[in-house]
Structures are given as C-alpha cells and as structure tokens.
Image 1 (cartoon, rainbow, N blue to C red):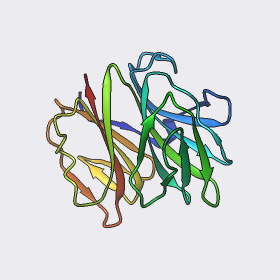
Image 2: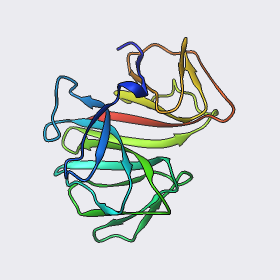
Image 3: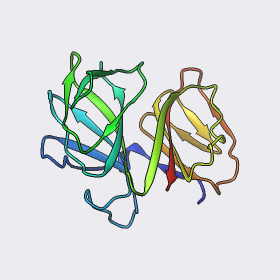
Image 4: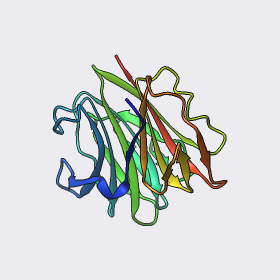
Length: 191
C-alpha cells in the first residue's frame, strides 16, 4: 500500500456502542464496511465529558491514550486503577471486561486502538522527533497520529489529529518534524 493520509476533517462521527457519547472513527479493517461487531481492528477518538462505563467489546484487546485534556483514571475490573494522562504511557486492557473512566479535572479527547484478539495484535507508543517512522518492526500496518506539532511525510504536512497509514510494503519515506512534535505510533500485526 502506498502512504495513505487521513485528515481529521474526514473522521466519521458515530454513536458509542453503549450510546453514551460520540466517537470519531478514523480507520477500520476491513475497510469495506466492517461493523462494531465484525471489525478486525479499529482506530477511533472519543470526547469524554463525564465519568462513565466503557462499551463492552467481546474478544477485543484495547489500548487508550490521551489526545487532549488532563486525562482519566481507568477502573478496570480486578486491577488497580490506571491513570492515563498526556504524559503517561497508553493503557492496554481487554475490551470484554467492565471498565469505568473517571475524568481528571475536565473533558478529554481519547485515542482508542482495538484489535480482535483472534486475528490481530497491536502496540501503541507516544513518540517525538527522535523516532524513525521507517522502523516498522515487521508490522503489517503502521499508523501515525499527530497530537501536537507538525510531521511532514514525503510532501504531506500532518497536523493535529491527522493520520498517516503505511504497511510493510510501503517504501522508505522521507520525513521531517517540528521540534515540538508529539505523535502516537501504532503498529499492527496480523496473527
């Protein structure tokens, strides 16, 4: 696949599975109309304005990071509470256990990556200007999401919430970034 750019204005707004809010679907696989019950992997962002439970996704592994806001404390069944903030590592947890988010002083925009446990695995990390985007660690798909600053990949300038997708066959790319760049890199492996 050649480099694919997904601009923030094109993210699809839809209701949360549990009806508690709105999410912005960024990318889904397969991309030919996979539903919330049939996707193999899904990347989305959600504005969370109040404390409340997460939707349950049987057979799904999930990771959550913060795009904006002070963060959340995640109460995950049978685990200690996990704070997720702008400076913390993303939190990973099974999508089929009860999880409740408690806001840390105000609304947040979170980033969610979900993979069907029987088909895909994933890893998400917060990166800066010292990361080589061509190091894909043999992933089948690699996704970059800008949180702040600018990232220029070939001739495409990415800013807040813009996304670049590449796969193992995408040729090496030229890239530059602003000194304040912070972006999430998600790597996906098909099982």
